[in-house]
Length: 125
Length: 209
Image (cartoon, rainbow over all chains, first blue to last red):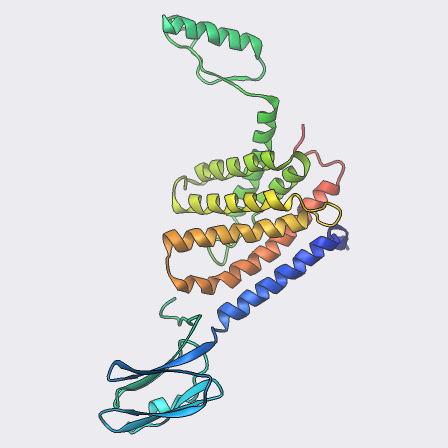
């Protein structure tokens, strides 16, 4: 066995460790999404409200079919109720990461999470 | 008139530094009113740098044959030479070797002044900048592995900045950063270990004649 450790001095070991930590940190930050800090709620294509995720609340958004309920809980957001026939946006469930979006097309309501670091999907990349 | 003076100087130069001058163009049969040769006076240090750059060049050509999963992810074996030169002959010589290798390498690969050349150049310049600082770290605790890791990270940082600001100004590039960082860490460490191995070997004569 070649004595690899003989070539790694104390400082080298520290640099190696810091480099590993730095790389790990980069990977976590860049691959596991930015932390979302606000929800952008749109109705009919226009921004209805921008709400921070820090406070749990339920917001009612009017659309052509009726009211959509958007719930914010524990820094997550979901569309809790919607008059749309197929309920796709409700079934999408909780949104956690920045860049995630849930759209209720028939009622023209959408909620998008926004944060400092926007996540990109395969379309962008 | 001018020509004869030049001829005279050429002969003087040839006589003085016969061994170290390189005659690029030699035309003995020409008449004396034409410049017959252009001597390029070189010193022993120049030859030394050229020899080491040629060695680095050989390694980069060798590594061009290794398939890579992602353009830009490669071992950077030529940097082993840069590290050894840095340790033995100082930063100035290392900078010469590194930049000459980038220039000659691009001529050899046929991408001189193409994007690949500028990427290699920005990477090399960033590495050299970082090495200029890291070489002052106390030698007792920090060896070639440290310099190699720092240089590798500086190299990808320089390249990615170049790519972002010039070639692909798109935030989607950040997705590739972890891959480059992992490659820099692994290859930086391995190259540092190889350089350290050669530096500890008293018989290593690859850069000295």
